[in-house]
Figure 1 (cartoon, rainbow, N blue to C red):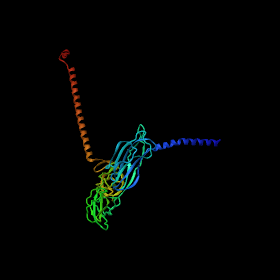
Figure 2: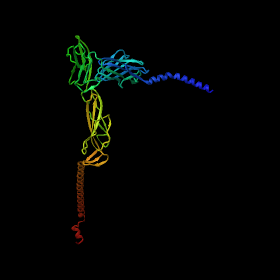
Figure 3: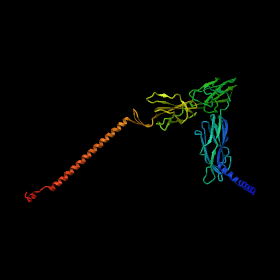
Figure 4: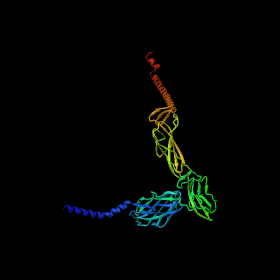
Length: 440
C-alpha cells in the first residue's frame, strides 16, 4: 500500500513539473529582462583605421516596440566617422542619431510598430569608429539607455548592457623605421615638448620628406628635406602628435612611416584640499580630502606631507612626500598649527600643489596668552575687556536711570503729601465767628 502510494505521488509530481516547466522557463526569461550588447565586444585596430561596432538588443522573451540608446566613448582615442550604417530592425526614428566627438557621446531613439519585436539578437544600428590614439578604450551604454515593452505604459525592461573593450595599436611602418630619444615609448605621455626623431637610411636612398601633425594618416609632400636622418622640433603644443617620414629611392617616393609622440607639459588643474571635520578642530587625526583633474594624460597619483608651523615651535617638516589616496587620515597631531601640502601628478610627470592650514586645539577650556580657548573657539582678551566695559556701562546706565526714577517718585510723593496738608489745613482752620461764639 505504501509503495503504490509513493508511485502515485511520484507520477503526480512528474505531471506537475511537466505542466509547470514552460511557465518556469517563461518566468525565468522574463526575470532575466532585456539587455544591450555590442559586437564585436573586443578587438585590435590600428590607429588611423576605421572599424564597425554593432548594437544588438536581446528582448528577454518580451515584445518591445522602442529603444533609446545613449553611448559613451573616450574622444581622445575614438571618433565617430559614421553614426549609422548597415541594417536595423528600427522602422521609425523618433530621434535621429546625434553624436559629439568632443564630449564622446552618441544617442538616438527608434521604434517598431505594434506588436513590436521579440528577439535575442536584434540589430539596432552599426556605428563606424575611427581610431585616433593608441591604448585600450571602451564603448559603453549609459544608464539612461532603455528598452520599452510593447504595453500601454511603455515599461522599461532593460536590466543590463555589456560594454565593448578595444585595443588601438600603432600601425607598422611602411617606410623608414623611426625612433625617438626624447619620446621612446609611443604609448606613454611625456612633458618634454621638444621632441627629436631619427630614422634609418637604407642603401640607395637619396632623399627624405617629413612632417609633424595631429593627423595619424598624413603623408608628407614630395619635396625633399635632404638626406639627414634626424630632426628636432621645439615648443610643440600639448596633445597627440604624429611624425611622418618617407624615403626616395631610385627617383621613387616610398611608403610613409608614422611615429606617435604624446606631449603633456601642463600641470593638473589647481585644487585646494578639504579638511574634515574642519580646518580648526580638536580632532587630533583629521581627514584630508583632495581631488583634481588633468586634461590630457590624466591623474597618476597623489603625494602628501605636513609641516608644523606652530609659532612657539620651530617649523618642522615630517620628511619626504609620501604617496597617498583621498581621503587621507593624518597621524596623531599635537596642539598647534600645521600646513598640509598635497601634490597631484599626472601621467606625464607634471605636478600641481595644493595646501591647507590646520589648527589643532585641545578639548575643554584653557587660558592662553591670546585669550580663553573653548575647544576650537578662541575668545580673545581684548574682546573680554570690551565685554566687561560694555557690562559696566550698561550697569551704570541702569543705576542712573533707577536713581532718576526714585527721585521722581519721591518728588511725586512729597507733592501729594503737600496737597493733602493743604486740604486738611483749610478744613481744620478756626474762623473769627467761631471765636465770638466761644467767647474768645
